[in-house]
Length: 417
DNA sequence: TCTGGGGTCCTAGGACCC
DNA sequence: TCTGGGGTCCTAGGACCC
Image (cartoon, rainbow, N blue to C red):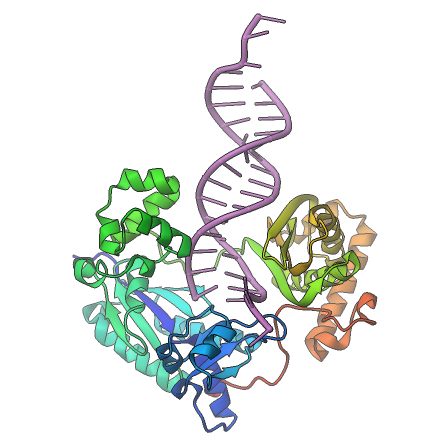
């Protein structure tokens, strides 16, 4: 007797599919999904990695996350299109809304994945495969892209199921199917087994999920510590008690980071980048009406060494300038002069009570900064991000806001946007 | 022309208190 | 007199996800 029924719905090659739909609507003849193609960053700006790939690109052995340089070696005539994150956000919202209108309880897991608890819907539970197939067809017809749906009794197994053959497929992975559908898979395929863990498991002689499931649990805990060891053992055995939650809890942190097109070697240059990152972090906080009280700065050097530091500030804020002042002082304490490739700013200890920041600031100061930031946000919402810049940016060619966003030129995902 | 940007969670070790 | 032990909080770094 199955107590719960969970669907995991995963957009096939999301960024690439969405990009393909957008281009077809613009009248482009070629469907990116029909040719070897990828969505990838700009090599000249040192962001040259594969973000999404078509099925035929996958057949050349191209993997998400690998460098474009390496992808081109595998397929020299690969079509590469730049990412368009603002548009993906809209396509994602459209996808999630569509699911929420049709399924009883939907949890967004990432930009292109949802869990749905369909236990309460008799029409679905009586014939889940049929219901999932119908849902897939609907999405494909109405929104123009395909999804995989995994069906099981918990989130982990539903997610593992949706990873089976792609694209445009429904798969089940119920408890009694684990032995022959999941256990023969290589250990890397298990959710939460990344590169490092896979190497360690193989050192223990564990190469398949089934071997992990039948390994001594205490030995796993000794090797991987309690939380991780337990999780690995349970996941390999298909155990997961986490619930599908509909309303997104508050985010734990909001950040912005960027890889600079060429290495930074002076504090002056670093401060400009920091300011642009703080602009984005502040604007994102204000947009969500959140304040935060722990600020952290991270640096990646040109040798890929990482440094980070965080401080708790005596009040919570969403004011760009306040975040920036702390970020500068953190930066100065961690930077030892090595050439910098990447800088990040992030704020945590988030809170919805925006009056809290009042207690520290002089009332007039707080009001002044808040009014200024809000005015800037409004101008940027109406006229675009470049309408106003802080003075420091006027004589540089640095982007004054990063955020990995592009403005304008987005169109509908069919008629649904 | 090698290696993004957005997050979450966990751990070890230090500071500090009683 | 010869360094206990429990508890909490903080933080840097590392692992993982998409």
